[in-house]
Length: 522
Image (tube, rainbow, N blue to C red):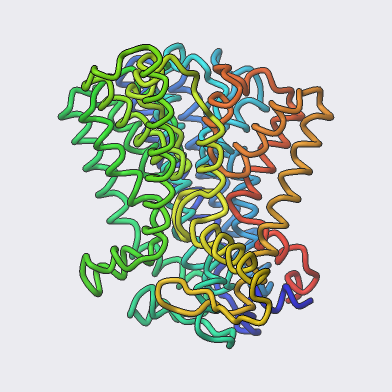
């Protein structure tokens, strides 16, 4: 198929050695995390949770030992073993991560636990814990740690697996200014490790590249939040939720409950770098901070945020005129900040809600227009980031291409190339972008129809589908106005949402690549 030739790069018949080690590494990582939470539960006197995490740590260790023997070398020559591994991680990983919390009073059944962990690993942030204050702290910590691990896996897989296959947003980068379908890692890193063909070697390279900065951003965010009055435990959970753009909160009142401008500024300073593609950060290390100004995705993000903030603030200003409260400068600033924070939060697909946004509603007397944030969540963040959505580069190219087609109505013979970052975008790149959008819309429609078949109203089904596919779980409550909306979903509906989360995180082009027969040939 032409699509397959356009979006994938064959790795040839080069043996991919010791793939089974990846499974062992993931299981041992889960075991180590469960052991840490077990110690935390013992320290806080949570005996019920400690038993579950102790059992989970032992079970993961045993599974890792068995996997070393059973799976070593069995799938090493499958051409797209990387995509298979990602799919297995997002499908089986939640079941493994759910082991410690099964049987707890705050978790109803396996379906609830699986949904929570699938949401964490895909960095979606949809939760069944509508009242987090009643959930044991050890479970809240584990959920945050799983989301942080999911964000790290997302970044590593983007560089080590999706980039060599020219999917995940890289299909545009690889085809700008050239038609040859060859891998060019120059925009990622000058390291020779980027050109390694073995999947294990590429993952090790990407992990070395990302792990330390990822942890530093998370720890700096946690310490800064704690310095601004957020309790240390909650600061750590919020930091994990923001660096992974998951949006999990450790308290029922959420970020708005702190009422701290300083804390919200810190979260914004964490969410934006997390939603910017890794390539932009690497380019800044090679060429200086000025490269951020030349990055097209950052410019597109700034334009989207400023546009939405301007519209929302003007809307609130008009409402304030009617209530004769425009002279209250402090409330106007609060409304402006609230709109800015919410725009950043949803374009990064995090979903935190600001105390300032509640103040804006009180100032203007107007209800929250959740549809504006829905659009931002669909756009999403940059390629090779923890943010979900269509991705900024694709959304911007679609807008440019649409405007070009409108201009051609007046001048049919004109030739107007599309530029991105000062470079010409080829016809093949635009074709792939349109294919992705069509697949995205098809997936959204199928998911919404499936949810309505379970008895949900169309608005709930449509909002839930967008929240899952864009990996912006908190979006559902903002659209429907109901807290804890996911708790009312049937088990079948939750499994559908889990599937949508996986498709949204892996992206539809990767799923299409997996569906081809050649992907399973050795």
